[in-house]
Length: 304
Image (cartoon, rainbow, N blue to C red; front, side, top):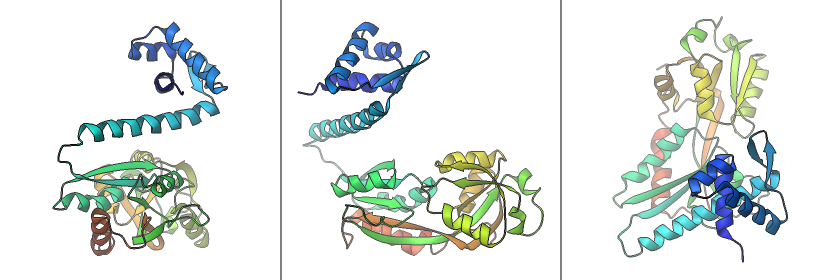
């Protein structure tokens, strides 16, 4: 039988980056912990760590093992809580997957109406790559997935994409950088430093196509999978960055940046993906209705 205690020890070492620190957290001696990790590696027939200076780094097999360990102990924690509260009156669960390329402000504004339902709702949000979230959706570990693209073709997952809405794109920059941009928008972006979203973002390709079609050639100084990190670099003046116009005013206030222009030619779309053709979950229904009647029909802009 699989030794889950050893798997827990492995997870602790992987998270802490070393035997000594993990041993202190687990109240074990480093020798005992090292022996347990060695036994686990022997049982699995693979090396889970390799030494990099004073630290331990995960091997490719170790990274795979850690992803499973995280999921196993998360599910175990959920089971423990569910059984502990079996007889208690509990709010109904609303389990949402959020593709990691969806801006946090968009996700919040989409999901907030669910918390205003008359029934008590407990929302569980998980952020990950879209493909992994869809796999969770397929086995009913999620009620819905919020994404910036419809369900990809060719996936072995039965699901339906419900379009929530779309909006144009606003370009933002730190005030000092904005003051240096010459000419009218969008020509002002030519040779300007530009921060763009990573390859998983549905906005990236149409944004680059639009720039190419307009014969605008900015200097690409950064690509970011994490939208919050991109905004932080933009706030520091590293480059101009693009945001959905629906949240441009909010981003400008929060990060102290200004709009340098906007276009409706580059539109970002957002979808709700479920396993149902007709949405039946009450929280998912209210999210859909609120998005279609509010967030994207009255997208906030900085110019008016």
